[in-house]
Length: 278
Image (cartoon, rainbow, N blue to C red; front, top):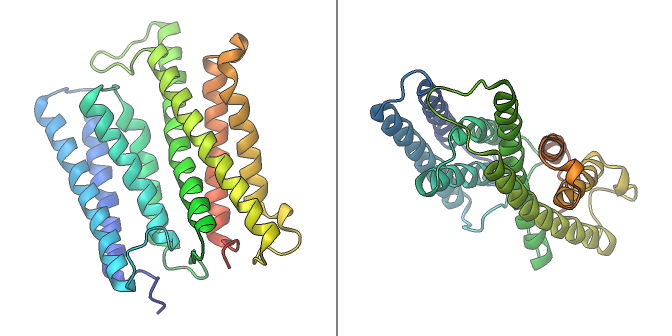
């Protein structure tokens, strides 16, 4: 088995991390009906234990393949996205909490970990990094994907909070935060993600035009290229919504969700045709 392919122990550890996140997510949802301090502590304990397990899998995998450089294969890349998203949730809920943030982001974390376990053992999915351009491309692309997960999740929170506010159907225990703050967080995540995605597209384009890659001469028709550019256009529109009052609020939140769907499509396409680095 190639050194970059995770072994059964590493897969089991990732799935255990996903299970712990799922338990923490269910406990957090349970606070809708019984908002006790014990449930809050139990949910946080599950989440921190899950983060530790995911980081442990990354360290184990890096040691097994003899390289501590991150993002050299999709197992690590998808796991790192999950870790970054979970740490974002834990940080925000520790400093300036947004009620229900974990309800919307943790499902993405679980999905990324399951994808790492499934696609991590599938060939050919090794991202061989040969240059600074490759590193910049990978870091910006996957960093942008993480930021867009936050934007899409908070955008969904905005739509739900807005609908409840119009119906005056507010939850009895935990609110979803003010619409103003949810919109601000969404715009911040979109701004960061758009900047990173732009860098990723530019560096990817330079690599394709300057070197021979597995994408072939018709690289512009590859699914991951088409989906990435479509996502870039959607987020470009969402980025300019503050300048257009008619596109603020719900329409911007919808754009962030549409863009997230396109980014997930891009990640899936990458798993079946990573190509650009070889």
